[in-house]
Image 1: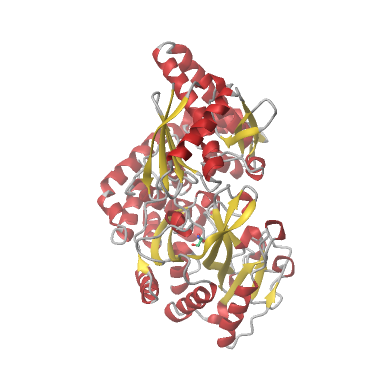
Image 2: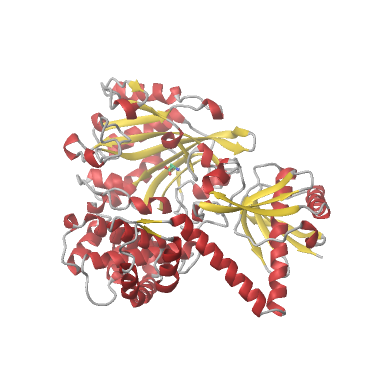
Amino acid sequence: MDSKEIRKKYLEFYREKGHAVIPSSSLIPEKDSTLLFVNSGMFPLVPYLMGETHPEGKRLCNAQKCFRTDDIEEVGDMRHTTFFEMLGNWSLGDYFKKEQLNWIFQFLTEKVGLSPERLYVTVYRGNPEIGVEKDSESVEIWKGIFGKEGIEAKDVDFAERNGMQEGRIFYYPDGENWWSRTGSPDKMPIGEIGGPDSEVFYDMGEDLRRHENSPWKDSPCHINCDCGRFIEIANSVFIEFVKKEDGFHKLPQKNVDFGGGLERLAMIAQGKESVFECDLFLPIIRKIEQISSYKYRQKIRSFEVIADHVKAATFIIGDEKGVLPSNKGQGYFVRRLIRRAARHGKQLEIAGGSWLSKVAKEVVEIYGEAYPEIKKNSSFVCESIEKEETLFYKTLEKGLKEFEKLKKEKVITGQAAAFLYQTYGFPIELTEELADERGQAVDKKAFYREMEKHKDLSRELSAGVFKSGLADKEEKTVKFHTATHLLLAALRQVLGESVIQKGSNITSERLRFDFSYDRKLTKEEIEEVEKMVNKAIKKDMKVEKKEMPLKEAMDSGVLASFEEKYPSRVLVYSITDRKGNVFSNEICSGPHVGKTSELGAFKITKEEASSSGVRRIKAVLN
Ligand code: SER
């Protein structure tokens, strides 16, 4: 069964069950600033999962392009990719666990033809600390489903320590069986939604065990073991909760958010051991074999990095809202993808000039029909990749020579890593990978500190050089920046903590701020927000920055809007009154004013809809 057929069967199956098929959204989020890329099918549906009415109804399904930055390190194990296609279906406060688990089992066994014997499932263990119980409801449903197949499904806990224990249903904690866009409950920012999930795993058979490479190599194999025997193919999330400052609250409706990776299903349906051998990758792998002197199985990691990264870069550049390689935000990821792929080409001894665009052309061949945008933009994609690749080769050799000089060091210092980045364009993971190959470590924290210093330095320089015009402008934008923090804090006090930042834009004339809220603000609410900000300004609150580990900041509930691109240490800006009451606490790279009295009078000039579920405020300082 080829991947086209699986995609079609899935959408047909759910269409027959009353679901509207909706298009894949762009990989670049719609004015949503929680993450840099769309990492799941539910991403564009968040407002509807929170209660807003979707024009297509309460049952939806699609195939969605997704990009996961977290998985970048995992590429190379035959099943992880950064870009993937997710088959998804949703119930927006309509059906729930019983229908979903029965249907997905039916789809996998009857439509894809997987043997029920090979399927194992996981459920949420529960966590009293956040007041969410163990998911016994799903356990009972699964028992019924397997029972009908003549399989007695035993449920067992603590699988990771004791192996399979003849179980079929396994309980797992927050880290595995809770899903939100930002991960487990502790990693969710205030306002984020999520819930327990129930996953289906496919048993590839014990003969495939590469157990000695597993983190559990000294314990018996279990389904989350990572040795390659079990592979997750389906995830039903029961999105019922929203995180608020005082803990988890039930959403007004019970939702289902299902997602399953198409590449993994295709791999199994096609009897392959690696996703890179399914039909969504094989032509790419063959192309790389053609232009290099190696076979895939001889250099698995380099082949997978190249195939995955070029595919991802093709989709991001060729997206409806295409992003080019650059030094910041999404563009920085595109740069890293291309450069890392190019460097792995050296491992495969691919000689001559640029070649990555040949691989990109294969990607367009495979996906041009399902995702016409990449076909339409194909020459632009190839040219952009080639340009970035050429730019990188210009400095790569020199950079590698420089890197050679560090051979004797145990640890590559932050300063050295920053130098490689600034002078030779070495993204940090390239340095890490090179270091790793030689058994060296890289002081990544120091690298980020170093980068932060340079940012400050260039800021000071530009302020100093352009004393009049530019410096003056810069000063104004800094004030607006601080006012934006006050505005968000005031909005959350007046409208509630479901308000989260959806984007902001500052010029020297005004600030513009987008946030989640489902209706127009009343005149009274606008006045109250204004008053609250002005009061904070009058109180002459202190604006202070503190550097801390990202985890500590997230755990203490500091507001974050760009979680994904944060380094492991971050700056947190807090705005506090004289008595020490915290008015605002946000992760932010600054800069900000030192005291709120510098801001002047705050006035909201406009409040309007920005997109569905998102409001936009414009404001000035006089
Ligand atoms: N959002 C869930 C996931 O990405 C299910 O779609 O796994």
